[in-house]
Image 1 (spheres, one colour):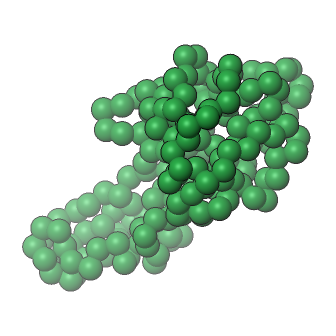
Image 2: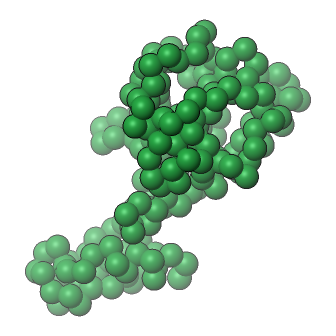
Length: 181
């Protein structure tokens, strides 16, 4: 099963009984053979914003791992008890100090996010929003650099995550064919 070997190192000991007789029995199900404890490593919801300013897209250079130094869209993980729209507004506020008024859901794409040896399967939800001004006060730990690029000039090979590399060309093609979504 793809990804299972990487995730075996997620737990060395059963969180319930402390024994080492644990294994993945499916891509998302970890089971302890000693006490039958079962842990489901389910898909995590993540959000990303395609922010449009003056016909260009805001990109960030990541200031943190994973994939520090690569290009990314503003965003992050949805929090418990938060819907995706609240999540993208919160993430953009945290990273760029921008208060998004209108957000439009564009679509989703599966992704793999590895952090500190744990592989998370994610469902990345993409949103679009026009902004009236560029951010001037970014979270310096999260954002190493802020870039503004014409959609056709975005270097997809420098984008941090596969989901964004796959989703952006579809957005750009729709944008070019119909104008901004």
